[in-house]
Image (tube, rainbow, N blue to C red; front, side, top):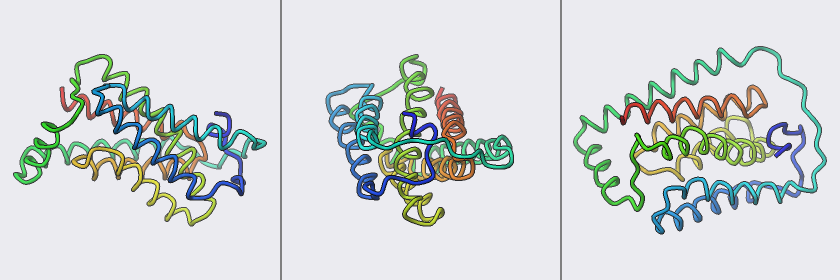
Length: 212
């Protein structure tokens, strides 16, 4: 947990990109199995198990707090909120008005193993609190951090955002990929997880409100 909140400059040499892919596979597989069982909390269950894997793999690493980057992160965070919420709104409008996309969306919702109501308080807690915390720990604090130590920042941001979008429903790929890019950019820019968590929570809350 401390490593994820305050990442060190060097990433442990024994951790490679394969380690981050294993974490994502664990997240995806557990979520799929829990969804088949009809569990609304499948998201949180998968995230907790994947986060435990991340914590165990980092357990023997000594930690130190990195220096704070120069410049404020709030303007960048506001820009990310505008871009992601705006992109999500445009995509939902496209799903409602473009026939092929509408059919894809309705088919995916009809065949989903777990249904949810945006008015259900459990759904709100899951998507606005649990998902931003767990997914930012996993995809930015672990996956992106490892990729960034091996690849260029742009390649790491793109690859981690791609993995992030893949584990979400297919019909939501474009806005979720944009969200993954924005949160990765905030992480690389600030070396802190909280800006991405805030953006993620605001985005999910906005999408829930649009489904109300």
